Image (tube, rainbow, N blue to C red; front, side, top):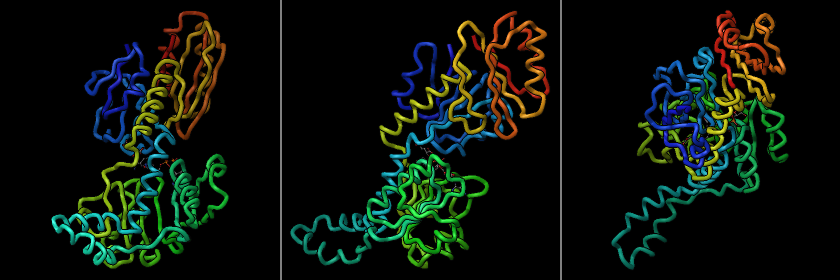
Length: 388
Ligand SMILES: NC(=O)c1ccc[n+]([C@@H]2O[C@H](COP(=O)([O-])OP(=O)(O)OC[C@H]3O[C@@H](n4cnc5c(N)ncnc54)[C@H](O)[C@@H]3O)[C@@H](O)[C@H]2O)c1
Ligand SMILES: O=C(O)CC[C@@H](O)C(=O)O
């Protein structure tokens, strides 16, 4: 029975795919797998038993992925599975920030009890909440991945002039992007020309604090900012001062800092981007399928810290999976150990990613346990696993 620790609530549409060979729970000793959404794992001791962590979502900054790779623990995410949910909330935020809808709703509720006067008071007071249409305005989309592309295409179809910036734009992403979206070659171009800016890139050491006093200074007067990516991207003090001066007319975010709550023109949401039944189901299904595929077959799909590698099982073979350092001679050593032990390699694949590599061997022949033990002692090898 495989054991899965669930650190957050995961949709049953996903967990029911585990079937009878798995047990899963929020309390689990010596798990082979962990399912997580946004819970921070940085201070967690990873058990020796752990083979894989699946993040039911996109961002993996809550997981120590590099340390996991060093320990031979695969980390997966579920690319694109919640992108539509976030796109819809961002479109909503564009309108909320433009038309001052949250403030208008708060105000109109204060008229409670005024009876027949309400309709007159509404007409008298509504002028304070007038705000521009988004049609014809420019939108800068920073990060053209699963979410950024959907936002860019949808905003274009709502009549916005859309500019996108992504220095790592993939070919696949470029195909999915509307031809009407202008490609910006620098962030400055976005900052200087856009009425609205929306962030859809990961929080990394390079992007942390990218929205700061200097970059806000480059933006148009009255810019409206959407941050449905991560709070760390924005310097809170600089943003508050831009809101106070009017440089920034509105900030809509899924990641409000304490200091932002109650500030006029901040639209704070409680990390709701992926909170739809559709996206929770999608993410959970992908996460469960990927963790099962790795535990049962050693195939790596959508990893963020190890190379992706999928190889069909060769009937009548046993499978040896080796996570190792990406160094010369590693594969020659594996084949030599197998050869000496009388093991025949029927099929083999190896892929590398940065400092790490992954090799899968489908083998027949002698008892493979001694050879697997010897493989585990090789300097380059991080983790060796035999799957029947
Ligand atoms: N609010 C939510 O609930 C919610 C839900 C999903 C994702 N997110 C956040 O949104 C981010 C994006 O999600 P996604 O699914 O589109 O991910 P993704 O990996 O598909 O896209 C991220 C894009 O950012 C680009 N990028 C990386 N560094 C960049 C840089 N310095 N400048 C410009 N672009 C850069 C990448 O090339 C990639 O195309 C995630 O990392 C996560 O932090 C939030
Ligand atoms: O799990 C969630 O609710 C949010 C997920 C989101 O932040 C992500 O990065 O995918």
